[in-house]
Image (cartoon, rainbow, N blue to C red):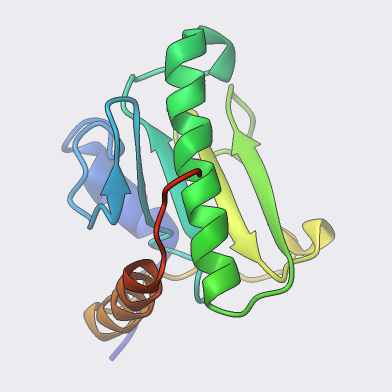
Length: 153
């Protein structure tokens, strides 16, 4: 079975409007301002995304309260990756317009064990996860979340 290329996925999802405003994918945790999901075409198996609910191209367009709600979900994503026994992770904000950016909705990548120079430079196009891969990653994340209490985070 051939995997769908990320560019093909984006072309399909753009027909439905903003993919992040109208998510088809699983939300692991959310608050009034943001939600946590998986990266559909991940750089790493447990690549997570934090998406502000407000459609904005820049984090500068978010209110202080919205930014705090995003930060709350980033902290929870970080706790999940630590529970999955990763020793390091990188948080990257993607915003504005540039050729490497594929979505015109500010979002945050929370990626375990990655070197920043590896992103977008591996020489091959990312592929979309299969339903089986999505299910396996989702189970990993949900199992890790069940072990965590988010009090104080």
